[in-house]
Length: 461
Ligand SMILES: *[C@@H]1O[C@H](CO)[C@@H](O)[C@H](O)[C@H]1NC(C)=O
Ligand SMILES: *[C@@H]1O[C@H](CO)[C@@H](O)[C@H](O)[C@H]1NC(C)=O
Ligand SMILES: *[C@@H]1O[C@H](CO)[C@@H](O)[C@H](O)[C@H]1NC(C)=O
Ligand SMILES: *[C@@H]1O[C@H](CO)[C@@H](O)[C@H](O)[C@H]1NC(C)=O
Ligand SMILES: *[C@@H]1O[C@H](CO)[C@@H](O)[C@H](O)[C@H]1NC(C)=O
Ligand SMILES: *[C@@H]1O[C@H](CO)[C@@H](O)[C@H](O)[C@H]1NC(C)=O
Ligand SMILES: *[C@@H]1O[C@H](CO)[C@@H](O)[C@H](O)[C@H]1NC(C)=O
Ligand SMILES: *[C@@H]1O[C@H](CO)[C@@H](O)[C@H](O)[C@H]1NC(C)=O
Image (cartoon, rainbow, N blue to C red; front, top):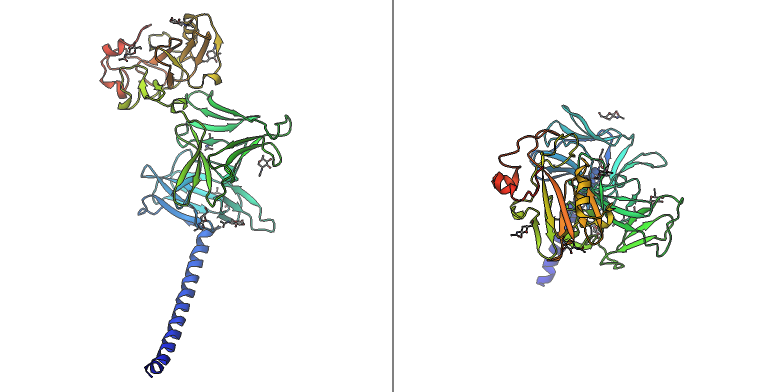
């Protein structure tokens, strides 16, 4: 009885609730899809300015999955970069290459007029794709693209062609590109049959130091001269493949998750320490999957300028009176250039150290010489030389034409590697330096009186 009386009310309620739910769902769906559609492409006329209330990332455009987003990212609090990030981790996958960065403030704006442009009313254009496209969008693989909306739907510009420090899965890294670390010190480039990692140790010189060279092993296919340049692709199967043409790789560098297919995505990045690392996304974090250099002492500048790396023990300073932990060993804040035109060699100290070697000496040029003294003289007479390392077991003399970076300490007691390095006395301007006495340099040296500095200087010229 009771049940019968109640039931009609129930049906009515149910009907009403269903109706309401349907309406709400429809409204939400419409709202959501409109909002999503609005941020999944930018059309001509789009313009946006940085929001002062945003503290780190201001999203402007996202891909269809919501995994990737293009937006303004804060740099040093007050500046702005344009970046594509992986949303769940906030990891930057691409950043627009600007020589100077605009301010995170009103006059700065991003607009799309056929070109995607960043400019401000005072400084003009900071960055532009210089295209004549109709639509900007991000593929579900994080590729930012500018497209023409004609029959061909041709892609006029894509971020995959201008990588920053990161490559993602199936992104084609060609011999026309370079991957540059965020601090600008290290880069990766392809050669005719190898991939190389290079360091810009001397900002005032064009000659850069290669510190890692991986030649194609050619196990499955050979690199054939005259068959075009090689290129490299990060495979979903967990390896970095080198190809010349076709599908058969000329080289495979496999990661720890090689051939482990999962839903996760992959990326490789050239790190600010010069290493090349591969990562795998588990759904909640990035797991290290590969690193080109596994021994920290083999990194191009593991302990910084004038540092020493002892395997298993860490960093110290070549001048062992300076404490590495107090901020590095570099005696000069502006350590660059050469010694040419200095007219008189009382402008630098000479620092010596026994039992050391260069971390990547097999990639450096050398000359065979009869003695350490001969090696040292060759450097003395050459104003672009910053130092030498002589090995009296091989007789090889390695000349270094950039401010000396880190050396590796040889096994205790071995006296085979001799390092002799030039160290600027206090420098003034670009190539003028006076002030022989008084406190030397800056940073860790500032507490050292000239007397204590002198005791490590074995030959003052
Ligand atoms: C993001 O990408 C992963 C694959 O890595 C995918 O499984 C997931 O569905 C994507 N997220 C969204 C919101 O679509
Ligand atoms: C878009 O704006 C830039 C910067 O103001 C300008 O140089 C360019 O000519 C414009 N392009 C078009 C198609 O109007
Ligand atoms: C990404 O887009 C391609 C088509 O461009 C599609 O085949 C694929 O399923 C999409 N992947 C995801 C995770 O949405
Ligand atoms: C950015 O551009 C400069 C010169 O315009 C170039 O030297 C540098 O390699 C570029 N950086 C990247 C990451 O491509
Ligand atoms: C990658 O780029 C090279 C050189 O431009 C080209 O020959 C090759 O076909 C490209 N591969 C893919 C998969 O796009
Ligand atoms: C400092 O280095 C010199 C060689 O340059 C070495 O003879 C001396 O033993 C070192 N001192 C300490 C405390 O390690
Ligand atoms: C290298 O020089 C050191 C010191 O002059 C000497 O003790 C050592 O025997 C030499 N080693 C060789 C292989 O000549
Ligand atoms: C001077 O040293 C540089 C390397 O530092 C070398 O490339 C150059 O050939 C040397 N010049 C002479 C005249 O030996």
